[in-house]
Image (tube, rainbow, N blue to C red; front, side, top):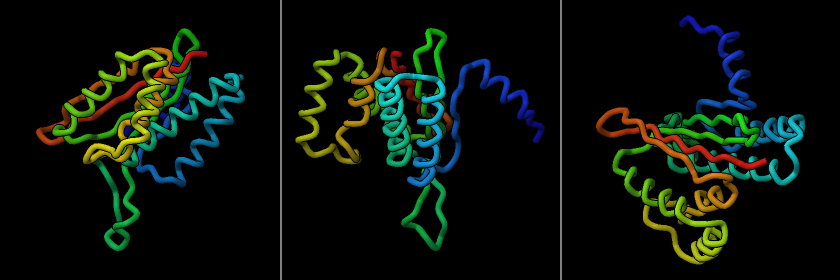
Length: 185
């Protein structure tokens, strides 16, 4: 493999990437990366409300990978500690807003459900999202869901712009799902 880390470093720097993690994700890695993120936001002087929002969205994005990524790594002798795989990138836009960008493999059969949920969130204002969040906390999650879409709703509440997302088809069974949340400064 011919990889220039210096080139990658410069690319990240020019794109204002504060943090990038790719690979298996566990609760332990979330804690370590989360601590690094908090420190980076302090150095950036992001402000308390912005830092809390970026960190909260980071946690929600990572939970989506842990709960829903179709790609996993496990050890035959320890099937209960399966690690889900994904990528998360945190940086700054040209307008100095922060972004939290996350991606992972999903089953193609889940695309319609994910798209429908995101589109419904995109159409709501902050007050409507707050009311929906409270309503969803009181009901049982849909089959196959682990949180009634609460994480996506919370990200929508904290976002400066509507949630951005895309699916890139990998093959007949899988696509790569990307979700971008921008946080105002």
